[in-house]
Image (cartoon, rainbow, N blue to C red):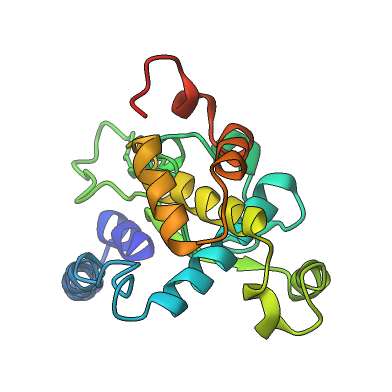
Length: 225
């Protein structure tokens, strides 16, 4: 669409401009349909009750991966292989990693406008539409790095679910932090969720994990508990 917009604004031939406009309109329609499909994806954890075991295992593994991104054990890449600056982006507004979709949503500060402006005073060309970086881009990890990392937990990936209660709690809380963003949940609610998913988890283990794995904004005095 960016290339077509340039053609529309700079084409000297009327037929070329018309053809580019028609293609641009068609792509715009496809973009709207795709965005509508994205909005109607089922909730990420819709199987909490119906497929509880799968939900717990998935939340554990996603939490472990997010923790690996934060510690540098794994590097996440987006677009054409650009490394995500995790420490810089992790608390920025709207930044999110969708592990289930292999996507990252860029922070608002990174969605730079690329409006094409014609500076020639004699030209009446103006941009038909501002061209923006897409909000979500494909995300990747290095297969070699992933294989080395996953061996820390088990030589058999099927045994990742057999983690100790505190490790499972760490994975769940890391997932909560990533999933909730700026919406800070009640600690008591998180404790109940963790205890339900991990019956062997002690309150002491939960509180220690909470102190270690949640951001400062979740631990400020006066927070509901």
